[in-house]
Image 1 (tube, rainbow, N blue to C red):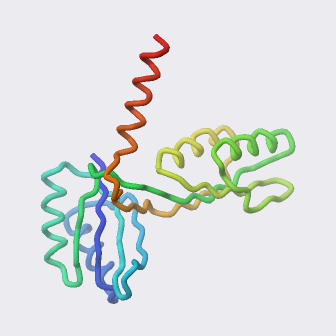
Image 2: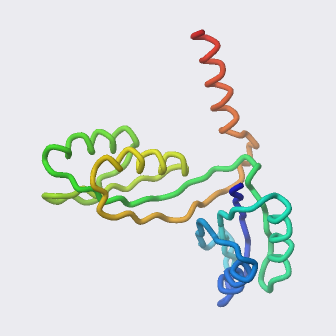
Length: 178
């Protein structure tokens, strides 16, 4: 199972190296990693996606707390969160396909950030599902390059789980139309 960890650290040199070393020594691969400063000077937030069962992730969290400069580790996998990712995707766009690619971009609210005679570069921002979906659809064209950020996440203060709301609304719609 994929887990999302949100780690607050002191913004000191070597912190990320110690964290990645811990993961490497334990044979873990980090699927996604994003680091950035927070609202407090000298504090950074690391958001990472890691695969493992609940017990293994609990052990990993305990190990993270033993590292120097770690302030807080939170497994936000099952907590209502706002998740976002950014992808730049360059697609071959010869005249026959350009219109279709632009329509797909419009549907996904992607921005065209570069255009040339033979290619379009799109900027897509959204939850990981949206990023995955547009990439799958654009696979029917020739994808020339992709660059993706790691997933970033913040816990929802409203405590509203939008994923559960989506499922609930879909179930209600299924009931209405059956």
